[in-house]
Image (cartoon, rainbow, N blue to C red; front, side, top):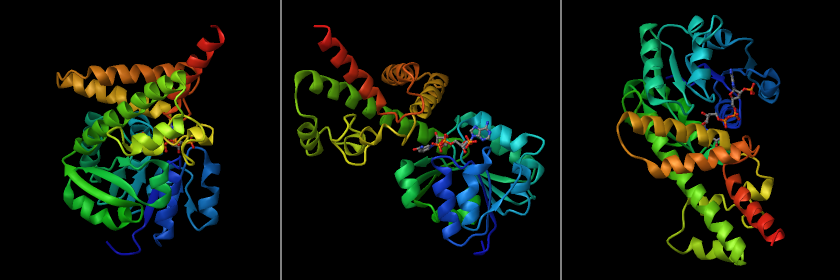
Length: 306
Ligand code: NDP
């Protein structure tokens, strides 16, 4: 694909905004659309064109990307009267980077194919840190030939691009990744609540874990005690990062998917309940590691009443 591939990006949230910045910085002509228009202001000031509707964003674009919450928003942005399908040219390539239900993604890919639009799924890993540094991992599901056409655009924001199989397989891998990541978060939350109750220093414990078998991405990035890791959500007011609502969404999707395959996932079901508790406590928009705060606060409340 030529350097002047015209790109459109829809969904300028915690992930979509920094991804768009990389596309623009790489020199691609970029049109953007966001439900809350003001979030595009900085990009427009930097040279992007603002579209009034998804349809307008799609018109004239060779490669269109979305980064939206769930299958419901992706389907809506695609199929509403002023949606992408009303503006996409035949032969355009559509890349959905959201984490959504694998079957829904298969259906959307089939729907696009009926309308002459080539779609692949490209769920992400690497979080907001990876989005800002342009080092994301992408798990591509769909036709490998479409990936090759859009690869230069994806390489402007991702360091690791894996074609993992047909439609739905990228999303399947991503949901499995979330099961493993979510389990780490809940294990850390419970462990650090015990350390807190027993009076073990959290920083010292983290130094020990880093060179022991407990070492994992969550130990490196998401210790649920403020001040232990300089760049963790806990140290930064629990700002997401990866919001608790999105982890609960992903674990719910993975639970449904596992059930459809008759695979017991008891640990995943228990982890989902923990994230749902954090949502009930009012922490929906805070980083997923805030479940640790919930447990540690409960330890303190218990001590007070002793
Ligand atoms: P944010 O909440 O930060 O952004 C959501 C985006 O979706 C915003 O642009 C928002 O617009 C838009 N949106 C929400 N509802 C609608 C709607 N009904 N119609 C149109 N647009 C809508 O989410 P993230 O960027 O964190 O996550 C986006 C996706 O990426 C999710 O699927 C998530 O699971 C996945 N993901 C997130 C990671 C992370 O670390 N944050 C890591 C890997 C994947 P508005 O500005 O108007 O609210």
